[in-house]
Length: 417
Image 1 (cartoon, rainbow, N blue to C red):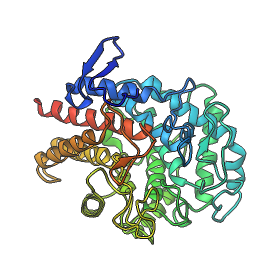
Image 2 (spheres, helix red, strand yellow; image 1 turned 90 degrees about the horizontal axis):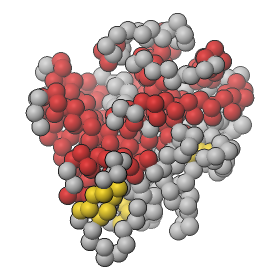
Image 3 (cartoon, rainbow, N blue to C red; image 1 turned 135 degrees about the horizontal axis):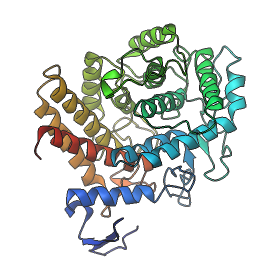
Image 4 (cartoon, rainbow, N blue to C red; image 1 turned 90 degrees about the vertical axis):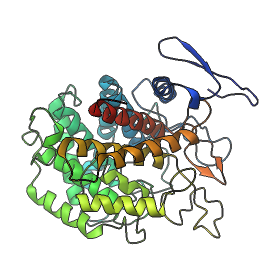
């Protein structure tokens, strides 16, 4: 909710019905911060399980964000897993399946062609659709984004290995759809051909896109890479066979591209996805990504996406040093360090001392909270010290919940807070 100018009190109704009145979100106890942040995220959730990217209607300039981005939905619903609301997460992923089924003709048509599909080719699944009709909205920019399919395959496989029936009814038809997606990815040569990546810019070969698809295929290939994550083994390879060749060529492509994100970007915020959620890079590669991101992209109010980013740049004529700063980056770094701390606690001293990771996870979470609004929302970005109008940004709001809960799980593992 918006806080009127000059209002010194914040009033929020928690899911329990309790009214919390404090001077600021930042003064709330941790548990109430979590509840307030999650409530704002749920304010963007629609009846069909999707999440608006934000509630900004475009009346102050720029694109309207009160629509569905496929990637945003899949990341926005991640928070549900971390608060135990698996049913809500599954509903969101079933919506993505519905969208893929609606445009299945594009997937099957693309699987017939052995070349790069182009920005808005007829075979490209659009990244943005209407939240009610699910109709495509625009062809104005790059929709050929391979990471969307990688994230979908990775997380659906992960949920199924955890015992959740994300595929739902009509399973045979859905598995045919999944096989069509795999055929599409391999036919358009996901490991060598360009796409437009998470930031919808390009075309280039993006390490983050290659890594996302490799992670998705690896999850279903089921060769043991992710086995440590699960209490019991639930084999998926019999449902969706992935040839070993696909894993090998994907790994080789990723190794060739790293440590750069692409030919034009030596580093990029989105490379953090290769560490979390995908955990698809080696320890040395993960450390190099973190060094590059923290050395070159961290700013006062967030992380820049990459050097010279023109999106909401404060000075387009002199872009380097004037890039928009994304609080989302603080959340992502906090999550990554919490995951590394947890891995160290479980496995010993493969990584540096866990306390170093914990301290960084805490510090980045604190920096994120400092950038949130007085009522607990995460802005998309800051330019010239001011946020834009996309407040909250759904997947950034979700990442706050994930960062908060990931650190709590580290505390629980250590036995104290």
